Amino acid sequence: MTHVVVESCIKCKYTDCVDVCPVDCFREGPNMLSIDPDECIDCAVCIPECPVNAIYAEEDVPEDQRDWIPLNVELSKGWPSITRMKPHPPDADDWKDVREKRHLLER
Image (cartoon, rainbow, N blue to C red; front, side, top):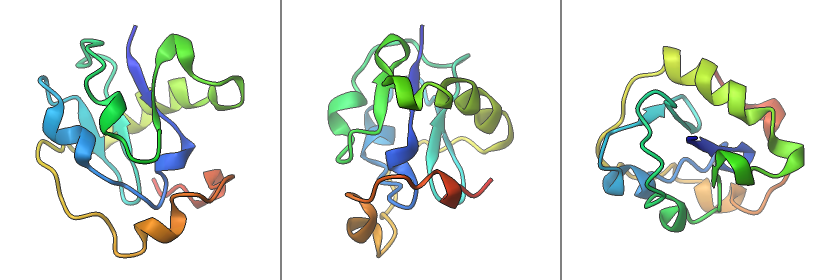
């Protein structure tokens, strides 16, 4: 199993999770993060670090977000590794409670 980043990360892209990851499995896209399932060791230390609850164990991904499992695989193959926390986007707090942001995903 692996962990999965879901829709609520879009436009927030807080990187608190990156600092605690022991295996550097996070990948950085233009406006969200993804997790490389080939690198993730399922340790779960990233889950409580996410201020928008965007990270789930694969088996716990909500039904309406399950399509993010294969999408994380796809996105992680093309995005570069991120290994250190970065400042979040200036408008991240404005987006953290917005639902249905899937159409805003930038690849």
